[in-house]
Image (cartoon, rainbow, N blue to C red; front, side, top):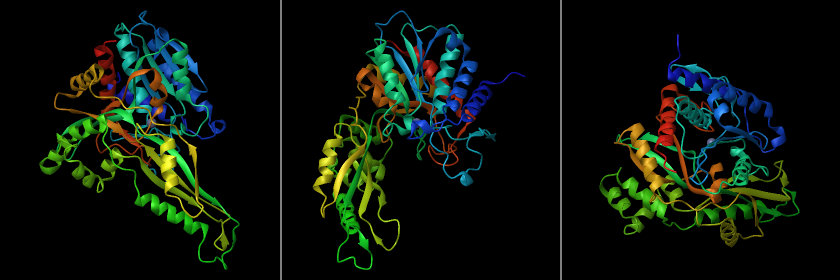
Length: 445
Ligand SMILES: [Zn+2]
C-alpha cells in the first residue's frame, strides 16, 4: 500500500529524530557521526535535490544546497534551518524516549520535532516535490542547514557564520532568507494569527563578580561580598531599562489591536498617543514587557562550595536580551552604573542585535499572500519582534530581508521547544511543506 503524504513526512521526521545531533559548547564533544547519519538520510530521501543542486559541505557538518538558475542577478531565495538540537534534559520526565521518534495517536515525539527538524523537513520536502514536478525557478535557490545554532553565542566556530561566508565567497551579496521563527496560532477568541518575525533580540551574557579574601563563616563581620552582590542584583531589578517603541514594535502593537476589544484595542491601535497606558500594561505582562525594552535577568549565582566558608569569589550571571538598536556596550555601561560594594561586571559572550526590518515591503506582502494562499484569508498576518535569536543574524549583512517564520500551524498538542516531551502532530506536517512550495512559486526575484 502506498504511503499518504502525511505518512511519508512522518516517517522521514521519525528517522531525523533518531539521529542524536546534540549541540555541545565544546564542539569536540559533539558526536559528529550522528550528523553523518542524518546526511545519509537526506541523500536517500531527496534524490532530485542531490541530482539538480550542488551540495556544498560547510564547516564540521553544515550543508549548503545550491540550484543555479543561470540568473545570478536576481535576488536568491535561501531556506535555512539548523540540524542540531539541545540536550534531552530529565529523561525520567519524558513519556517517550526522546530519540526514538515514537509515533502514537497521530503525535511524533522527540527532541527536535519542533526545534527544528520539522523545519528542514518542510523545506527539503517542498523543494524535492516541486522539482520532481518540473518546477524550475528563474532565481537561484539555496537551502542552508547549520549545525551549531543552539550554542551560537558560545562557540568560536559557528555553522551559521560559515554558511554565510560560503555564500559570500560565491559572490552572493543580497538574499531573501527564511529561518525558524513564528507560526500560525489560534488565540482564545478564535483569531488565527501568523506570527512573522522581522527582527529578534540578541542574548548577551554578563557576569557580576568580586574577588575578596574569603574566610570562616563564624567571623563574617557586618557585610559580605555575597550581600554586596545581592544588593546589586536588587538594584538592577529596581531599575529596568526604559520602555521604548520601534517601527516594528509599533507595527506589532497595531496588529495586536485587531485581536483585542475595549481599552486594549484603543491603546494598542495608537501606542504613541496612549504611551503611558501601554507602559502600565507592560508592567503587568511579561511578554509585552519583553517587547518594549532590553531585559536584564540574573539566572545563575555562585559562592562557596561549603556552608561554613565565606567565598573568596562570588559571581552572578546575567542573561540580557538586547533590543535591536541598542548595543552590548551600552548595556554593560548601564549595568555598571548600578553596581556598588566593589562588585564588577564583564561581558562573557554575545553579539549586538541586528537591525530590525519593516513590514512595509513588497516581500512582506508576498509572505502575507503566501500565508493566505495556504492557510486561508481569515489568517491575520502579524509582523513581530522575536524574543529569541537564531542563526539568521549571521546573514544580516547579505540579506535584503529576513523572515523568521516556520510555515507551520501550531496548536496545543505541540510539546515545548527545549522542554521535555517535545512533540508535533503529524497532521501539521504538510502545511509547512505546502507553504514553502507556494512561496517558491510566488517568489519574484
Ligand atoms: Zn531552533
